Length: 421
Image 1 (cartoon, one colour):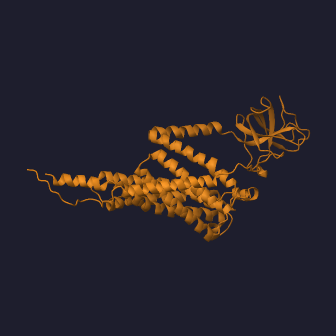
Image 2 (cartoon, rainbow, N blue to C red):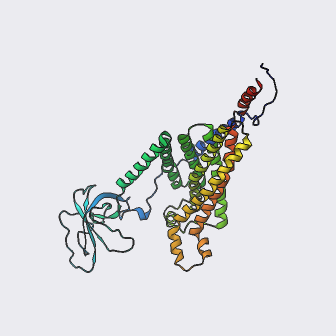
């Protein structure tokens, strides 16, 4: 015999209904609009930027490179009149053989002198290229004051090997992750586009570095997360958690740099920027680097936490939000422990050559750690670690709420099923 009991209550999670989902989606839409407005306000102008002196040719123009292949390599007398010049056949021998060097005859394969040769003379020593016959290289082509074309070594040609490595990377990602992996690669392309088209030109244009980093980072996060993981509540919870954590990382970075008086001038690239691009703030650039550098690890942690919360909620439909949050946090604590090691060791690996130099300088450990170059890596690792740790409970709480956004209807259905016998 069946009895219908009309109880006015049911067991299950607190009935917030779709309110949490509406709040999160509304916040993301508002932030998205603010990011687009910020992009428009910070968009770089089209003004020309002078080429810094170290990157100019002797004539003041941009460096032009051509393709070349080393066809002969030997050790012999230096001082040939053919060194750096264009010729066919064999180079002219030196008039006075004062000393020996490594000589490389190079076929020029592009540009106005394609099909001819040049001679490179290199005195062996630290930092000098070690060329071998068959090496593909890039040559700097410039014209001296007399109008004569000169060639010099620029770098090894890495186009083909890099293309192969990138292709293998893409094939493996798509083969394992399939369609989602392909979308992740598209998101990576969008991130690179934001960096090249918006962030770098805006910084060169003198726009404030921190707003540029926050706006650019937000554009990257919206594109990468939704492309890779789909337009759903799970991804939205991870995105909101990552955006909030990025803001925390920005605030922490500012406070840490102010407290430690980091200048960034211990790094050669920053010194060059200060010397040759005077409208860019080195401190701002350092801050922007901290912010952008934190995105990868934050994205990894937040999407994992969101997925954990949603999967746990799906496995146990009767679990409360508190239970889902507690279970997902256990996963998050393990993730924090492992990721902090990764974060710190990655920065330590980047500073390894510097640490090696300091180790033979006879300086105390305290002096080494507090030096600007090492302190930058310490602060970067600590700021990233704090933002990472805070992102876990924040994202987990958002995901636990959204994973139970349909709680009243689902719980009512289960309650009706239990009472209808």
